[in-house]
Length: 292
Length: 239
Image (cartoon, rainbow over all chains, first blue to last red; front, top):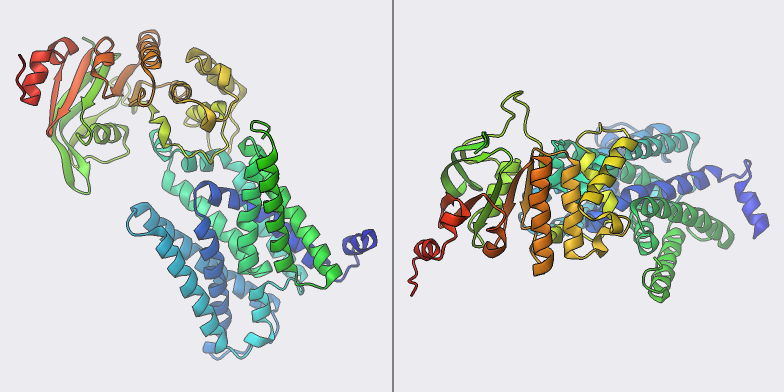
């Protein structure tokens, strides 16, 4: 086990970019996941990665529809294209869904469920007509964290660093608008601006996570670490740090297990997170009240 | 009576273009204690939300500016404690600290002087003992004290309280109302308070706004809260 760990941590490890990307996504997704959990937007955490992956599928297919030829395997240009598609669809979806949520009409769960199934179906339809779908794009959408180039890693790190810095810098405004919107208005805060900023940060993180680890695993990292941390945290600082640590450590341990047992990385990570949540839930029930 | 701090001029309020109350013209004096009474659905909360800027008036005008400088009034809002989601892991101090966010620029930490001021506000409301307890775990009365401390931390011109004694027992109601009255006198703030509790408020309020069947009746408690006047308003006979 120790030999395997030192091998994975070695700078010469062939899949080192995959390790770094997994851990980056593991640390970052829970930071925005905390806001999704607090705002009771868990279903948005399911729908958004799926919509984002549809954006990837469409963005990668557009050149083919226009008659341009792309390489069979994801390259830097195609990765950038996928990022743009993912971002565009994520942001459009989150802004439309948030706008409809604010209007307060209809059923939010119904809208999110429809967005999820429609996006999933559209991805399959688009890729079924894409001759390169079998050669690499499907792996990307499934979250096979294997072929991460230096460019992908830098793009992921830069995006997530931007999200992290913005969340840290404007944490009090984002928290106020989430916790007590009327109070924020009486303090003359521009609540629409802060809402949009939060949604942009969620959209950026989801897009990056979907490109790196796929929609299912992105959803797992967005929500399960935050739910696990909520069982033990006593304040917001602990909540955020515990959630991020839980995601980051699970990403690294999950990668190690997957590498040793020759399993797919993403699903291993999510199962590990689910086990952690179940164990945490049991411990929280056993612990005497007030020890949290 | 002091000069008018807030003036409503032929105001019509409601939701989605549908008026709840129309033709409201009244003024609220500086440093006064005004209670807004009325049955459920009479428009108390709608009036409060419109005054706070949470809802736009359907027509008419609200003048809520400092007469000397023209600067907008600072409202210290105390919502109903029950409306907060317990999922937020905030302590009483965290909640009270939000009162300073209007003065602290985005991206800046709350300075230590502001933190000290919040501790003073918590001390003043008697909430300092449970300031580090999770807000969601506090009793109704304790939450109200924290929320009043938060409103005071905004350094308000007007303290606006939405049913601060809802779900609070009689003893705690008396303590909360006495504290609000004392705060008004000591800090010279104007108080606007929504309540159902006729009996408790009559000893504290100087002006009553009674919302009844789309109309706003106003007067001093001694004029409006007499048994004869109440019978007249409700169109019931008394023996």
